[in-house]
Image (tube, rainbow, N blue to C red; front, side, top):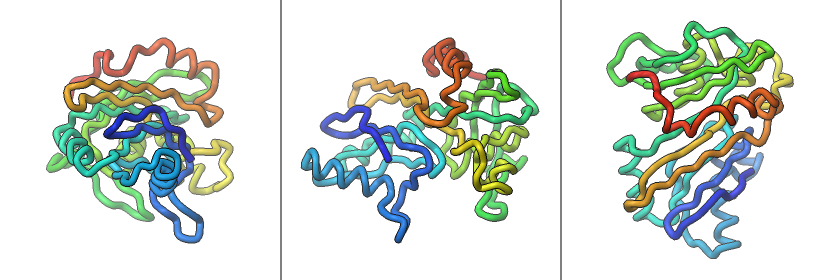
Length: 236
């Protein structure tokens, strides 16, 4: 379900596998949080673990857990102040209405557990993005969300006509064929950057699963792209 990337006295950073639910799934077994907590308790004798943020079941990549209530409060304040930079990778095989820029708007519940992007701006979801051609009629997206709405990136890309390959809700082929050749939803929590107790932490983790993510053209493109916080992002 996961791999430990690094840990300090106060927190642990892990890599979550795709198709793993964050919470327990009843008869289907323990979810990611329970698995991480059980592992750390057994291997490192850590008594407590606190979730800081979450990833959708289909999404792989970087996650932070706090080891104490105090560190959880510190991270809570960092997230509330938007001082934790998060970057994601996604792949779509649909032509977008724009190739880079800003996707902004309120989000509202739709049908079948889906959300939709609205034209209103009362409490908008805000996402910056770049996209790159990777051949085979696919585009690789590098995205930076500035809010933490449910399904935010999935809805943002769907709103510009580029739903994520393998997304069970927003990608039409996934809805009609549960055995889609994609094998997973192509969304990955790629990088994190934050300052914790006056120390800067930076993590970049390329995807390790999913045949489209592991293609040679994606690997070449990721090697060409600088660390995401060094890019000149589209204006907010």
